[in-house]
Image (cartoon, rainbow, N blue to C red; front, side, top):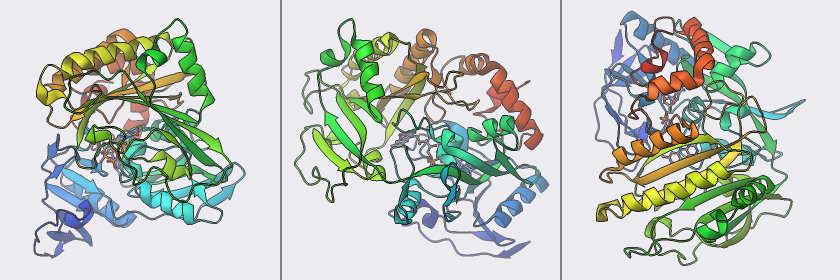
Amino acid sequence: MIESRAGKTLPDQDAPQVAVCSPLAILDGVSFSGESWTNWSKSLEAKPTATWYPRSLADLQVILREAKANNKKIRCAGTGHSWCGGAVTGDYLVLNHSMNKIHEPKETNHGWTVTIETGVTVAELDAALRAHNPPLAVPSNVLPIDVRYGGILTMGCHGPSVNARSMCDMITEMTILNADGDLVTYSEAKDPEAFSAACVNLGLLGIIYTVTLKVETMNTRLRVKDSYPTLENLLDGPDAGLKLKARILNNEGTEFLYWPFKHFMKPDQNDAIWIKEWERTTEPAESVNPHEGRPPMIDNPFFSTFHVGERVLETPDALHFQLGDGVTTVSDAGAAIKADSDFKNIVQMFKELVEKNWAFTTSMPERMGTALEMRIIKASNKMMSPLYDEDPEALYCLVNVMAASGTPGFEDYSIDIVQNWIDKYQAKPHWPKMWEKVPGVATYLRREYGDRLVRFNRVRKTQDPQDMFVNDTWKPLLEDL
Ligand SMILES: Cc1cc2nc3c(=O)[nH]c(=O)nc-3n(C[C@H](O)[C@H](O)[C@H](O)COP(=O)(O)OP(=O)(O)OC[C@H]3O[C@@H](n4cnc5c(N)ncnc54)[C@H](O)[C@@H]3O)c2cc1C
């Protein structure tokens, strides 16, 4: 069945991932190779028997047919920005990076929507929507622009906007190729239960082919305000929780960033916290970012792009900003914690975290590259979202502890942190982050997701009765359900 065999060329380190994957063979028009795979932070590696590079729905069907014939499992990977092993497989890995078609946006009774193939990156969709007449935008989004919609929607990812909720809440329709090779359409109108399962599906219903997202006309801009108040000012006092809540609800979005050292390579503890706040405005966007080219205000090279001040930017420019030096990769453990009505639990959790992080980061010179991050957004009604809540007004804190990749002891430290969030705050791990090694986590998640996991599995079994899409990350959650 092999039609042709191309020679292997040396990968160009600077080229995008799809270009470095030189095809070794083509089967019924679909390229595949024996390339191994690593994620962005190089914390995961896979040696699939075949890594496939489909370009069309017909290509995906060939891969499905081959997997069935050869009794192989399938996982997909986007840009590899996750830390959990969702994409890892020893069988067939599908990289649909060339499936990046963006259809013409449509105006419906409920506003604008756009249908895309799931290999589309955040940057590609932002550019296409901005060029549309009228200009459109995704109302909230993840920080990086090189990740792909297959990856961010599968894992229940989120941006900072409190009202836009998480990315899965923007989906109006999805098409997924199931284990039988059938393309199944999911929508609220067709089947609300299956649609809810599909919106955060962890790659367990099949290969997601297309997704339709709600987008908005870009007739407002975002005012981005950066400030650097003291931790004491933000977190101390009997009303600290309520003041924090009011601040968050008053903004379109709010993000908190904290790094432990006041000055680079000096031992003083940082007593200030970076706050980024987004506010809608009808003022025109500034043509040039006034912070660009200004000398760093922070003498920590990892955060040297941060400036205190205000500017008005178009939505995508405001939502995606540079975090880090663009070179260093990081490890990240993160979870969702439901905020109490007075936000006292969030204040307490963050204060404890600052303290624990200080103890960790000062215990060895090699541990100094840590950071904490937190956003608070409204709940999701999608059954496998870690922000699931029956109350649509419930607020969830998404908190992350990060360290430069390779920081010694970070894995054990982050396990301890996540365990503590679980024990004390009933936290639910954010799916793409580090959570698999927390002792007893599968039992905890099975209990916490409870009936919703059973319902999800019921939908899953109709699409994948032989567990073709189940790998070692997801198996412990689904066994014997
Ligand atoms: C620097 C950085 C910043 C980040 N910022 C944020 C943030 O602001 N908010 C947030 O929520 N997350 C954030 N993340 C996490 C990131 O958004 C997720 O890891 C996301 O899944 C990455 O997308 P990806 O294209 O790299 O997907 P991958 O990590 O490659 O894949 C993720 C999962 O999706 C599955 N998958 C991918 N495509 C398909 C498909 N077509 N069909 C079926 N399954 C598929 C894979 O099997 C895998 O299980 C960040 C990560 C990094 C490294």
